[in-house]
Amino acid sequence: MNQKKIDQEIGFFDLHDKIFAENHLDEKTKRLIALGSAVAMDCNECVAHHKDFARKAGFTDDEINEAITVAALIRFGSGLKYID
Image (cartoon, rainbow, N blue to C red; front, side, top):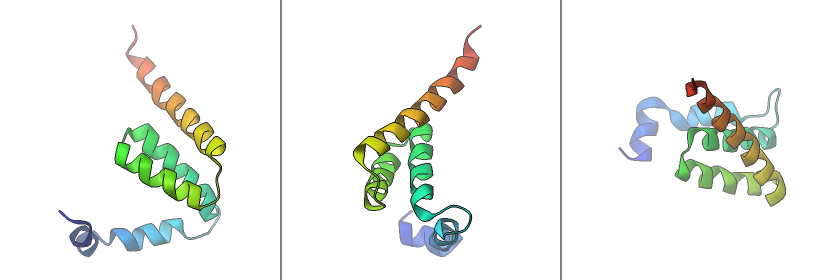
């Protein structure tokens, strides 16, 4: 299913715009949260997409890499529950 059809059916981009609008958190902060979430979800396409948006929002590569490290730690930690 293409992006336009998805948007027509569920209004994804309207929802996106509402969520990324500045409210209690600014858009820049939300971009870093989105990147961390993409890392935690292990979605390669999403990570690349959100890294690009984080750079455009003004984050440095060092800041982006630190956010990725935090998200990777959370992802790693969630797998530890399987150890007996």
